[in-house]
Image 1 (cartoon, rainbow, N blue to C red):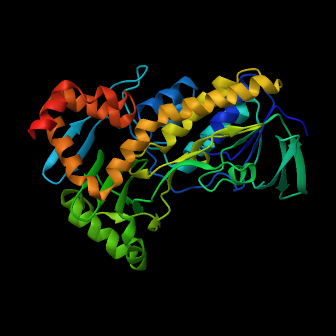
Image 2: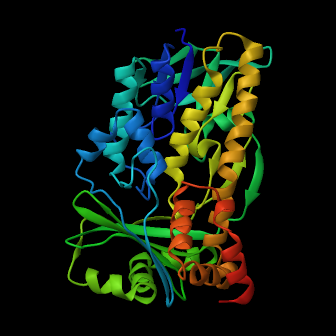
Image 3: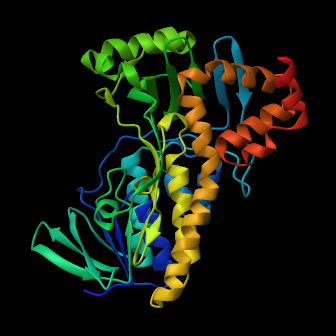
Amino acid sequence: MEYDVIVVGARCAGAPTAMLFARAGHRVLLLERAAFPADTLSTLYIQQPGVARLRRWGLLDAVRATGCPPLDHVVYALGDVRVEGCAGAVDGVSTAYAPRRRELDRILVDGAVAAGAEFRDRCPVGELLVEDGRVTGVVATSPGTGPFTARAPLVVGADGMRSTVARLAGAGKTTEHPRLTCAYYTFWAGVEADFELYEGPTGWVSAVPTAGAVLVSAYFPQDRFDEVRSAAATHYEACVRDNAPALWARLEGAATTERLRGTGDQQNFFRTAAGPGWALVGDAGHHKDSITARGIGDAFLQAELLTGHVGTGLHDPRHLDKALAAYGADRDAQLADAYRGTLLVAGTDAREQRRALLRAVSTSADLTQRYFDTVAGVRPVSELYTPELQALLATGA
């Protein structure tokens, strides 16, 4: 089977990549090891830049139709310091959304198929084909017919943090930092909430409204993971109660709708983005702690970056190699700020630094707006640290 592009992984990085390549006229095979649709661990939240991409792709109406509400008010609180507001509009989009992943991933795959991509689920990839040092295809397994071979000048790994494509291609980590948090979450019905993030003496708590429920997550320092998972429900409730007491008061009369889920594997890294005949998008190439809820939007960004750099030059190896190198440099440059910011937010040793920043930001409407724009990825961090903010931080005001 001959294709122009093979995309391995059909979630929020792979499906848009397949869709955009297919819309550009390429023959695309989209493979997914899981049976679709299926849920997955996720914060759900899509910041304004990601929502703007959904609208540009013609998929936003379908996301809205899932029933997830528009989110246009954000609360950040660290102890007695509190800021409220919302990121500015991106291409006319002023709200965020948090659709359930089984719905979002289905919409993205449907978009890829509508563009002409061939989609196969329950097809794990076990081998990369390599000729003269270039990846030229995959060997995958179909549930009905067994192993099959597919060839293409470009294989894209969008298969998550423990990417098979990355491992088989030898994509090493170029940047890596220790895990900082572990997280547990469940869904609550009958609760009113905005997008809310609280930090207290023992951890962090977030609330994210989705269709018919609110996702409430409890984050703990990574070094407590063994302790927390031994009695996860007890520690989850204590974290919400101790670090977000006002939110806990709203939850006391409500009921959870699903089991408690969690992870301690919140890795922080960049991998080599691409090589001869292969590229990585989404968590396969870059992952950071979920506490800043940037994963889905970053996956959308990488899909656009890769397809934009490659363009129509798939069958010219020299052009493709240059395009993939440019994609990697662009990816790293565009995601570096958010990576550093996430490490700052998720590290317990920087709490007083975060408190000072929030206190300074809260003194000015302009700084508050810049802060929320920075958090959402609407503007770079450099535009937050104005002379006014630097003076406030220097004086401790």
